[in-house]
Image 1 (cartoon, helix red, strand yellow):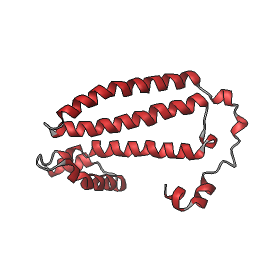
Image 2: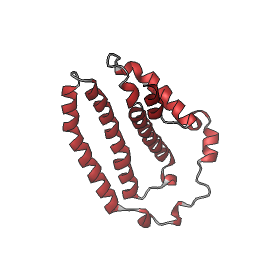
Image 3: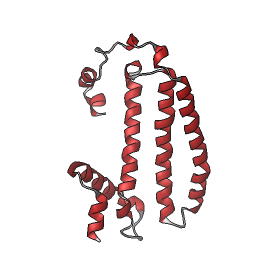
Image 4: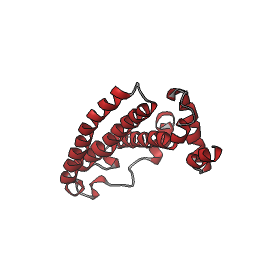
Length: 166
């Protein structure tokens, strides 16, 4: 994203489509209409089924910290279903490749990566969330982000780190 916003010339040099002829593979062969419809239908069904679950969790959130965490994870899951299901279905149905719409594809990929990172933060930081029941969850977000960055740079698991401290 840094390249796109602050060094756009470098972005254009690295992500241009000068070596790829988009018409080399005809549009009819790139389109997967049945798969696109299937993915869109399945992801829409999953989103619809998620809504009553989220309402149920929302109603119980005041009683338990566990429900707050489950609600945050549910929001991330719904956003991930949007990127994995609906956007992939859109690309498959219309036969889009990167060079068809590079900007949209780039931002869709960044959105999918954001979903992936947020899911990892919540899943890998779960042991740190249990460290104190008195601590409010939003106060631990800087700790969670720091642990996630350290984990990615050093290559060790937060689960092993937190279990060795107890």
